[in-house]
Length: 123
Image (cartoon, rainbow, N blue to C red; front, side, top):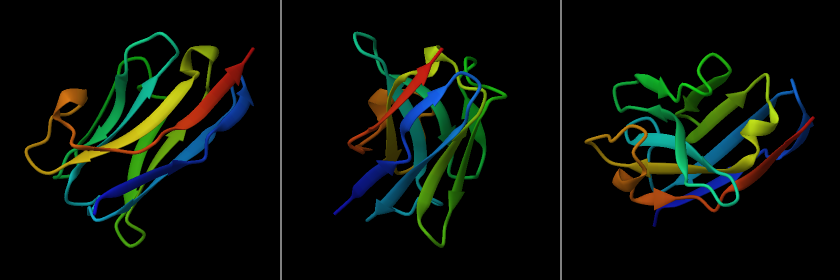
């Protein structure tokens, strides 16, 4: 059975960094399409970073240059390194996965979702 579990969220000040982890079971993160999404209160969920099956990555314009997505096949874990955080990054972050074909940052294409981890950035 597929299970995704996010961790690493917390509270930081503007300019700080956090590293989120998404441990997966029942799905190989290195051969499935994976992504991280976020949702702020009252806002729609948006894709922030994704891994295609071939290893290509894509980022939302709002996080490009600040966030880096990576994966460890041995640990079957997805990571999101977040740098130069700002209050606009405050949200609940979710990891998601689906088999090929990949759908990038479109949330409607993903079949499996984690429960989410909270990130709060203060001024």
